[in-house]
Length: 435
Image 1 (tube, one colour):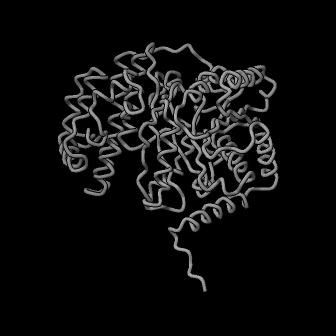
Image 2: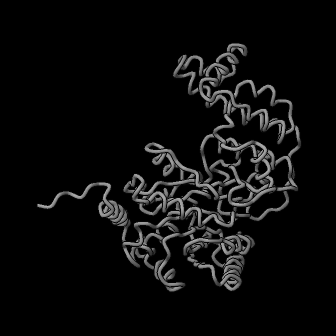
Image 3: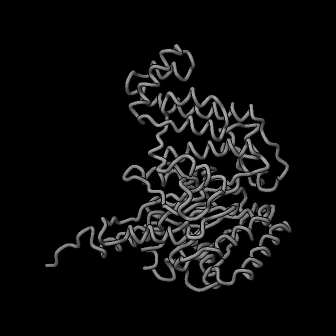
């Protein structure tokens, strides 16, 4: 009688990934499967079998023709990477299928292919009654996974998908190579292997728009808070395909934060790594279009994502004033403080105090004492807030906020000056982007 295969054995791991993908496809209705099979045929006809590293990008074909060549040029400049392909999913509302902009988007993609013959660029197209980003990404990822599965089932074992958007501004030259290097390390037999490779973050941030300095500073602040909390943007998450299948794919009805359930499922069982040397700058266009009137909360509100999104086509933006900047940053910081402190106050002192914090009825001195005590226990004595506000926002409010020691410089891992220099593009090598 043969002994059972240990769970950490390579064969057991491979079988686990294959079974997960097979189970995922077994739940897809036949009519949807036939659509994915057509996509697979299209993808294979454009360049033969797919490599195991895929950059997956949805493109609103009726609105984003002008983004194509710049973004693809960034991938063409990648250095030291193993074979990878960029798959563009051109999509539009059914009512826009005959829009000349769709044809212009295709033309620009073909021009990029001719300009960069060394880059593996492929395209599929789909139209929707009502496009929703969750459904669009799901169709794109399912088409890619189906192609890997159909060309050679074994290719899904080590395949990884890189979730990007077409409004990419810049990526570090070894971005792809460093992602691939990270997953080779994860798969190293000398390390503890798991059945499904982990999801990971890359160092994503918004590009600095020099013509809109106050919006750009507000965007920097938002990016900084997200990174301090250990988060990442949708366009910058790396998701191995077997883990994608394990998570049930993208949720078709998600209008925003469509990767959140993958992140949550991973964070429940392990720390989510940020891959070093993977600097990515994405367009701040959504902030430029919405921050002035809607504040931070309105930038990513579900009702702001539409089939004809204004931020994809407009260039007529107005910078916010310095006063609005200070107010926006103040509100954002207070929201972050409330979320952080309240969660601890609930545990420590009960919901009565938490309700007072949210309603603004707690005595200010009592609130300050509670904040200082709880935050001191949480994050030690970092003074990053003071540095951020004085050096980026140029506001004396830093002295007030610094007493709370909200964020620790240790967690950022580098000096604040290096962070700012990198953010403003004074350094852009693979190792100069500390965020």
